[in-house]
Length: 106
Image 1 (cartoon, rainbow, N blue to C red):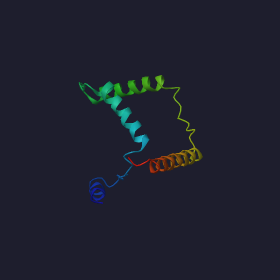
Image 2: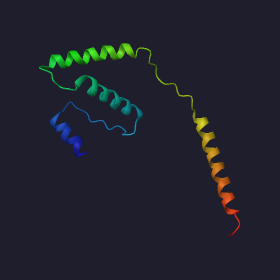
Image 3: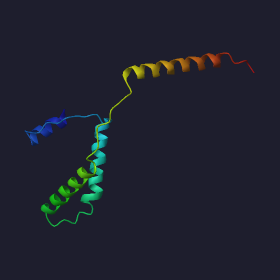
Image 4: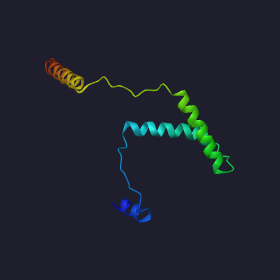
């Protein structure tokens, strides 16, 4: 709560949003910005912000042209599939527990 209060005090129009650190979409964002850092911003030998803007826009245009055919991933693994997988794992675990209880004493 302290962070929210500090942010609100410094920037009344800003809203702090907490997101999951394990969300797959945040990883995709991190990957994209890592690419931008390596391919666009480094080395940061810009003489003014216009050069930064121009280089970022040129990269965006190339990136979008190259990835124009990209489509969202369509998941085929359903909740029913997950239920079946978990049931199979339960059966497998139970089978192995029974096998280990029938081992003859040494």
